[in-house]
Picture (cartoon, rainbow, N blue to C red):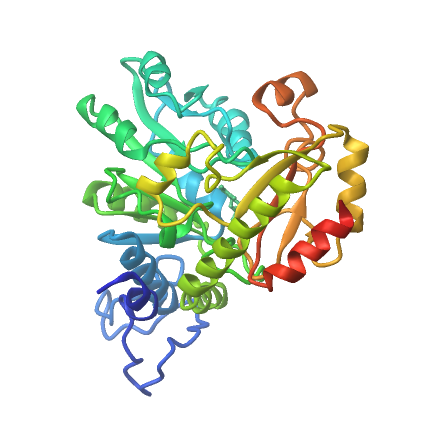
Length: 378
Ligand SMILES: *Cc1c(COP(=O)(O)O)cnc(C)c1O
């Protein structure tokens, strides 16, 4: 089955008792047993729920994984992965990381004795130097947030596997439609299903997909034991969202490519960061590794000040000022004061999150209307 067909059919079959085409929302906490431990595969809803099973089968299908495990949020999915490690274990992660991931690693797991190095994963030689005998995993985010740096998944997984190091890819920014990390050699792929997979800004969720039986067992143990499970209605909403993933992402990418070109021409705009522009250092890698350059754009203004950026964001009508991404509606945000507001200015500027940096999540509206909105705001 190819991707567009999988998005509708992978792991899905009509419900047995009624023939319902969509899996029902099994709103139950427990299941009747014929005799102790004799049941139809479900005993308690923290451990499993048929609506969740349908979603897990669909996500596994999209990522080419044996199975997927769903969680109550993206950070809960990462939390379950991190709990596989023990004090003294070392993890190498990107220095341009989703803020919530950085907070989880440094404020929850570092105090428990897990060690982290944050490095530029776009340079394989730099990564090699960061590895230690105790390194257990490389945590990859690509494209990164908000600077849209690209990391060569195949090169890093090749480096890691020769040394018995696990690799996990946060595939939230690309979505499985544009990038399939397991095929490129990664051991695990993680999603905030809140974003492109859900696609309608109406639900929070997370998932990890893998074909490694041992990792799957550890993830299932975590979800059962620590309980960060998604509710059946949330699973249903994400499953419903995924059915249109391919057409939504395709349109968003078309719109983003158009807007990136137009932004580049505008006299008030400084540097435009978009992996589909020839000026982007990851332009060739994006072509190799992704089916399209994504729906996210970051750009700086010629007047690189907070005031200038805030003025633009207050003038847009269609682009709503909000955190998050990956929905049908276009969003605009200001990393320096929003997602990266707690990072000291010098550090933030050193990695490239300067005062006027603006991040766009491009939705599926008409590109002409989106450009008109940006142009009047600029
Ligand atoms: C949103 C996001 C997360 C966290 O997911 P939640 O569903 O908000 O918990 C992790 N990684 C990336 C790249 C994200 O965009």
